[in-house]
Image 1 (cartoon, rainbow, N blue to C red):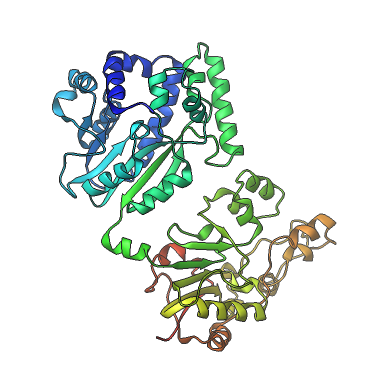
Image 2 (image 1 turned 180 degrees about the vertical axis):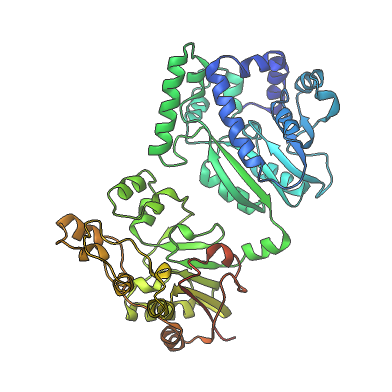
Length: 480
């Protein structure tokens, strides 16, 4: 692997022509514009008005930050690169420092936000570098970092460094998506969002001399984005991350379990699910196929899925006794038979720590019945079968909350409809506050109380609670 001195010498030599390389042809310009658009999209979500740019190069990111109205400063190890920035019109107005990103010359918690684009791949020690970023950032400060992907064509460049510039290829320090997430978590960062850049090798764009070829590659990129899993073959990952506050770090250490999460899970929680959409989310290209066949809800294909651990919650939960701080489940228990719900609640009681809480969200049978009596169709509204030619009454819309409605149209359903309607799990039982409280007490819980939407001692419930119009929210506690 190339040493730091060789990398500095390489960029000192390349400084004068580096700007020309970044605008070599239409293909390279399109890649840079795409990367810039992704960066700007994340940039608008960053609080504060100051930025430190690490590895400024010839000032491409500094210029963009200035255009967006940020106060900026920059560092780079290459004195020749810094000289190129100073020659530009905006360069004289920016504080530029020759420094190493692995040993930043700034006080603890002194930087509001930072960016590191196309530079992280040159750092030898990824963990040490992120620890240094964490040290200088203020509480809840953000960072925009472009990480190189180990599982892309760049891996071949490290294996065959003679293919292209040997110094550049031997300097690459590549990481997998899982390694990036793990190191960020261990160094005290919270991931706010991620996206990927190109999948087709960069050198293909660098050799384009005809716009028709560029349009073909652009179409191919869009097709690969739709077909392939998000992280497959991507050249780089752009991460928007945030330094944890003290409160956030304490919550991160909590064991928080979300049962039957679907796409309503969150990072920092252990999201358990065994449904077909959850299993298909591991191969994301299957989601739109299953949605087109109407085997899963269309929203399951459109949503961004959180990290899911595949587990059948009807079986024993994979946690030790008294280990979980809190448990959350939303619109899941009604899909289980009543004896399965009781068994699951006993498992929840087993794994919760003394004093731990469980929050349950369910369709509220009382609210649905009250809506029927009050003729409130808005709370009962559900699309009738496609082949329906019969008028539907308020009673029909109430019954549709419990039974497969596509099987009850004006005509006998086809075999495909029969198969499709039984493909996802249907409601097996319904509850009001009294009936679910009986099961909770039987499982050992006490202090069972109905709760309003979004209010709880359990973190993140405002992001998790669903369907306030028809839902029952309740919590129970395991005694100390």
